[in-house]
Length: 364
Image (cartoon, rainbow, N blue to C red; front, side, top):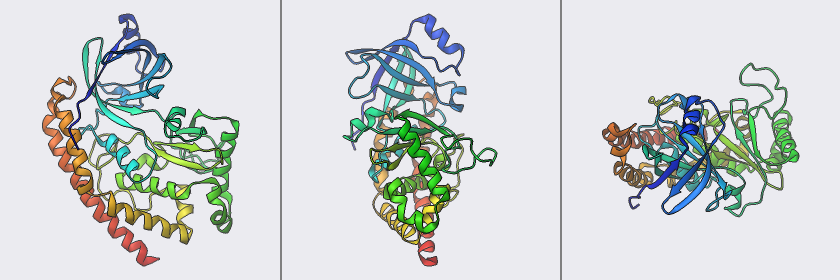
């Protein structure tokens, strides 16, 4: 891959609005602003985004076009600081990997942000999973849900107190869709928790794109996103009422956790975990399909040989601007060590997963 040149994004906010924005990082109310990209000027809304990352000194933002309502096929995008990720690339590498194995994923690119002329540094610009996301991919409109907390666990019980949920949409935030989509999601959760094994095996394909779900699950397991099974995903339901799962928020991956600390390469099991996964892998034919798909991914995409050129190219582009980032300009030496850490993680994780697949095949 060739080295990219980071696009410059310049945001201008009225000083009084900037003061108001910075007064309370937990306030989701956006402020009006101007976005300049090259010779293009757009009227936008800007607001903070994230949860625990709002406490960090380098903030992340959500940008929504105001006038016009969209540009170049997008109405909303996200600017992630990636402050807890010294490699800058784990989120983007995850989305790239998911896309390569056949899972719909947000587009992402590194940019350089300034606000009112002050350098804010290197950011990851991430596509929003919304109506335009599917429209741009010539897919029909449907329901879109974000799994915003651990109650999005595909269970009838809450992850927090293990008591029955008051309603089955707990844990989800609807981004698009209608009441019928709410009903379809509720039906999916109720069905997978109550159907007998024979009924589940015969009818689950009516509710879920099982092959796509397995590819998503493989992506979560390979990248080792510990929160990814009950959180950090989006759901899309099409006009036939069939669901697909998409990845979201994948900086705590490739060997690091949400705090940026190293995570053991064998921490997440090859089978993953959540109620839906457990039910699917209880069906012998589906379990065989899962491990067949998993082996194909290990053979074709999950290896340092396949991913290193991408990592090297992105890091080369980041290195060209890292000294201009006031928050992370002292991290230049970390890029090389992180590059090696990710490679070692891939090699160790791949060997671990290969051994687990062989073991599962033998036990079956």
